[in-house]
Image (cartoon, rainbow, N blue to C red; front, side, top):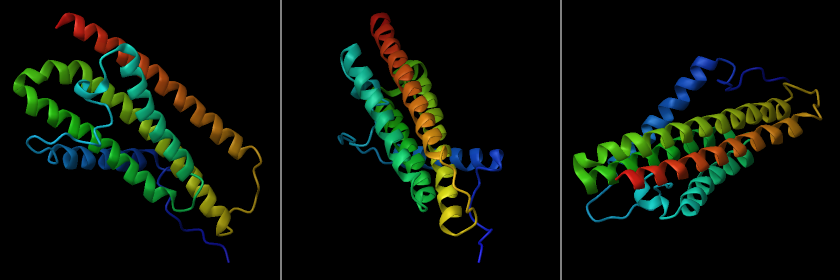
Length: 194
């Protein structure tokens, strides 16, 4: 018996993007309300310049590791039928880090944090969300394909599917490296201007 009904919101691009953005926004809200006086957040994901590092290499390494670990988690979860659920949680987690980072900057610097948030945090957060959404989109597509195969909805074997999946994630990782290099440069320039 073939099961034709499954959750695959990646076919409708508008619905998929909207739901992914909603998950990120939910994470931002949760993260921003989770900062308490005197607490050093653990799950900040190196969005905040306060925790990114002191040198160009530190900033690059921390930013790249945050993006690469997220991408690796999405890659692994895409190989399972239940990966879609984890994809949503990954996006909430990404938003959580952004919310915590912005809240910490405002908490420590008050309104003086606005230039740092606009110049350093916002572009990095947008790029991080972009890369995260690319990774989760591929996770969702792969997870849906695995689900169709397991339930007998698609009995055709595509030998090039996994190879293409790996190539897509290699490209996402390369984009992450470029974003990390740009973030290092922006932190360096901002530090010189302040």
